[in-house]
Each structure stands twice: as C-alpha cells, then as structure tokens.
Length: 215
Ligand SMILES: Cc1cc2nc3c(=O)[nH]c(=O)nc-3n(C[C@H](O)[C@H](O)[C@H](O)COP(=O)(O)O)c2cc1C
Image (tube, rainbow, N blue to C red):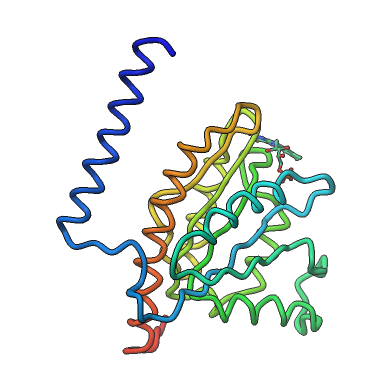
C-alpha cells in the first residue's frame, strides 16, 4: 500500500475510534437493553429482476445483521409476491400477507439497486401497497449500482418514505458492483446504520406505546 493510502487508512481508523469513544462517553447504547424484546426488522429485497445481484447483497447483509444482538429479522423478498400490475381496490390475498409483515415490523431495511438513476419499479409498486404499516418507524438503506453506489436511488427513496411518515436514518450501506468489495468499509457503514436504526426503532416503539401515532 502507498504511504498516502496507509496514512488515510490510519486517519479513518482513528476518526472511527474517536467517534466510538464520544458515543460511549455520552452513554449511547448500540442496541436495546438486554431485557428488551428484540426489535423486529423487515429486510426488504427490492429487485425482482431475473438474474439479480440483490439476493447476494441481501445474503451478505443479513448474515452481518444477524450477528448483532437484539434484532429479529424478517426477510421480505418482493420476488415471492405477485403484485398486480394495476392498483386494485381489493388487493389479492398474497398482498395482505405482504402488508401484514410490514405491519408486524418495527423497523425496515430496504435493499435497493439503482436503475436509471432511481430505484426499481418493483420496489415502488410494493411500497405503495402499504400505508399505516410504515408510519412512525425507522428505515435504513443498503444500495448498490454499477459505477454509482445507488445513492440516487436512496435519495429518492428518502422523499418517498418521508411521505409515509417514516424516519430515514442518516447512514447507509452502499456498493459499486464494478469495484472489489471492501468488507471493512461496508461493515463499518452497516454497524453505524444498524446502530441508528436500533436507536430509532426502540425510541419509536416506546413512543407508539405511549401515544398512538395520529398523522
Ligand atoms: C434497467 C437498468 C438500469 C440501470 N441503471 C443504472 C444506473 O442508473 N446506475 C447504476 O449505477 N447502475 C445501473 N444499472 C446497473 C444495476 O445497478 C446492476 O445491473 C444491478 O445488478 C441491478 O440490481 P439487480 O441485479 O439486483 O437487479 C442498471 C441496470 C438495469 C437493469
């Protein structure tokens, strides 16, 4: 590794360590307390494309998230559902199962590719089938693309999820499929994102119990 790269890596490691120390000094907890019920997190796989990369990204991410204490994951693969081409007044039974799983979740992770500087239609179609089920819950993102890292998709999803009364967390996890995967970098991003998701998830669980969310 060149000297400049070594210095940059050391500076990044030192900054991350300082941030961790500051968090501990403030008494931050990374997950819920030991005696709290695990936070129910729906991990939504947004691509339904034949031959998709999304399944591999989801497998990597869920393996990592499962190592974290205090999360109960439900992997919601949109490819398992048959969303009608038209929004129907009476959605078919399979869609009720989808919205029930959204409703049971206390937090969401959306795994999205970037298609033409946005997120895929399969994801928007699914999002639009829920409404109350999204309300007053946090959302985190895992994104990927070819040349970009899916940030256009994520930024547009933040607008969509604001309309649905969610809290989108600041940090996200992102990959450029055309570059070698840096597991340390994505692992650090995942830790930050899951920490924020857990904090909001527990805070909003308590808030919804104290006072129903009326939008
Ligand atoms: C219709 C389409 C549009 C795409 N547009 C972009 C794009 O705007 N930016 C980008 O970085 N990658 C783009 N890609 C590349 C995808 O990010 C890449 O193919 C990725 O594997 C798609 O996710 P999936 O395999 O899980 O469906 C596009 C791919 C498709 C199929």
